[in-house]
Every structure is written in C-alpha cells, then in structure tokens.
Length: 108
Length: 196
Image 1 (cartoon, rainbow over the protein chains, first blue to last red):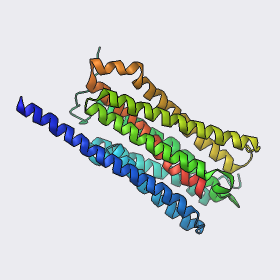
Image 2 (spheres, chains in turn orange, brown):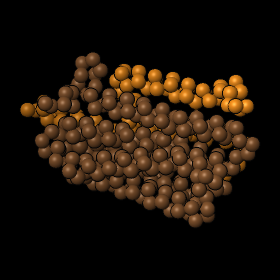
Image 3 (cartoon, each protein chain N blue to C red):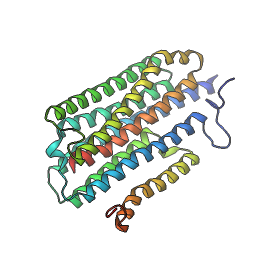
Image 4 (cartoon, each protein chain N blue to C red):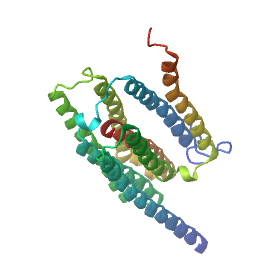
C-alpha cells in the first residue's frame, strides 16, 4: 500500500516537472516570436533575413516538437518515420528547383 | 470487437496503435504543406520582383495570432498533463481554453481576410496573394478541424473518462499532437509570409 502511494507521488512529481518544462518552453517561444518580429524591422538584406528568420523558426519548431510533442523521449519507430519524412520533404523541396535548373517548363 | 492496442503497448512498435497512426498521418501532412512550401519557393525565386509581406499584410495582427496559437499549444499540453494527474476538472478548463484560443485565431484571420477583400486583394490579384491565401486557408482548415476534435473530447467524447480513462488520455494526447503540428506549421508560415 505504501509502495503504491510512493509510486503515485513519484508519478505526480514527474508530471509536475513536465509542467515546469512546458511553462519554460512557452516563455521561450513567446520571447523568440518577439525576436523574430524585431529582427524583421532591421530590414536586413533578403538572404540574411531569410536565414535568420528560418533559423529562429527552426529553434521554435524544435522546441514545440521536442517538448510539447514529446519527441525528446519518443520510441525509435517514430524517429524512423520522421527521418523518412524528412528525406521525402527535402526531395520535395529540391525537385522543383532541379526542374527549373534543367529548363523544363520554362520554354514549354 | 474491441479496437486493439489502444492502451496496452504493441511489442513490435513499442507504441499504442493510435500513437503510430497519428504520427503517420502527420508525416502525410508534412508532405501536403511541403508541396505548398516548395511551390512558394519556386514562384518566389522565379518572380522578377516579390513584395515584402509586411507591405501588404498586417504584421501586428499576425504576431498577436502567433502568440495566441503558441498559448493554445501550452493549454493543450496542460490539458493532457491534467488527465495524467487525474484532474478532470482542470482538463476541462485547459481544453476549453484551447478551443477558445483557436476561435480567437480564426476570428482574427476572418478580420484579416475581410480587410484584404475590402481592398480588392484576392487570390487572383497576384502570385503573392495566391500563395498567401492558399497556405493560410489550408492552415485555417486544420485549426478548425483540430477545434472540432477537441470540442468532441470536451463534450460527448468526455464520457469515456468514466469508462476507460487511460484510453481517453491517449486520445487527448493524439489530438494534442495534431494541434501542436498545426502550431508548428504556423511558426514557419508567419515569418515566411509576413516578414520576408
């Protein structure tokens, strides 16, 4: 009975720890959103602006995926699915670019 | 016949069926939005000139909406954490807040769209607006879809908490994964369309 109670207390403490992490991530995401907007007012050259904006977005996206979606402690199968998705996603982004480089569709 | 592996873990995947299913669904969603992002890059790089998003779109309103969607992600994950702690009342509060924040997001988008239409700016006006309306429109449909699922878990679906609380908790977690994905897409859409 006592061990059952200890287990419940441990479980509750673990959830509380998670909640503290969620709040930290929330504050960080809010701050990074303000940073993204502030940087846009600097009117950086396009290439630099794109790089910085996507870099900040990538950090924010990683925080959401790792902590809110629990990817930081997920099973191998999920990582496998995501690696495959990432490969197809990159191919999807590159295909149109390669098509343009080849000249298809430009003189068609 | 009962649906298998809703609560117990499958040996081969180490997951419940619902969890693996939602991640496979999200993988297909990545490809859907990926195709549109690829179209955006292609159209933008091929255009002789491209307007800066902030000259056409309302950045303060979109910033507000970003903060709203991030807040809704937190309330969503807190609703799941509440179930894990067997606090059903707190779950209802957080889930209600998530749906409410989703409503706020859609209302702000409604005003944004209405303003564009009043100015005579439609998807047919130019390529920038075409890709803007397509991407944000599809994203809004996802927000609406997520709200419907969450409303189900707050309303009629909540009865399952009495009969099978673990399964209910897993279902809310899966619904949350979709909601966070929608938030994640917006995190990339916001700078891409509004700030660059």
